[in-house]
Image 1 (cartoon, rainbow, N blue to C red):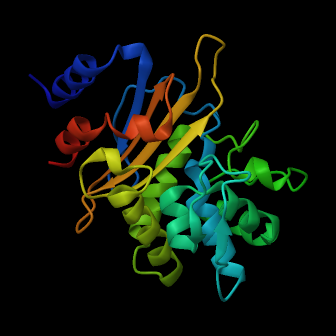
Image 2: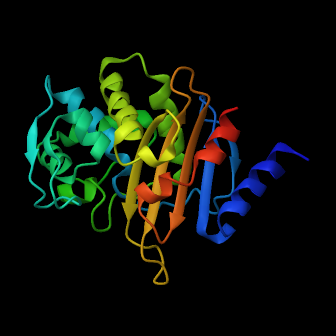
Length: 241
């Protein structure tokens, strides 16, 4: 039995194949395994791309903001309370990142996107689209997993260390805590791609933390990013072994 058969069997045992899509890459960005059709076609990933907004902001500012999230305008109606960039990433706080995006230097964002192989957003788009609301900020799945692979390779850079600290906390106590394995992670929830679905849940994981070998991008229909995170542990453990 080949490794690919084992992996595809693991997925099939947990979800109907049509409901889950995933791509796995190594640290160089080389795609190792995938069952994601049309992975070069752009889709909206919700708030999955917030780490790159954070990088762009840090590239143009000496400090990141600290704000209070009371819940108004955030997905978490009770409010996240006081948020710095690490907490904002961990909680995927919409209030924090909307504030960040409203003051973001778009030239810095363009540069960050080009550095990571992502399609820069239109400068006519409102800040809400940048954080994944409405039509969102579409990217090709292959481009997204390669961008996160590069993020992992840049772990020694000061700005990247801040972002990875937020992604680690996201796994430990934030929206991706359902993974159950120590990794760098980020979730996203987007509008449904088809009318028969209620939404699209996304999660990216860089595993393991000490010596990253695997980057996994996972999507599941009819769920949120936080819920999608609860389903990837077997696959992530198998890929990272």
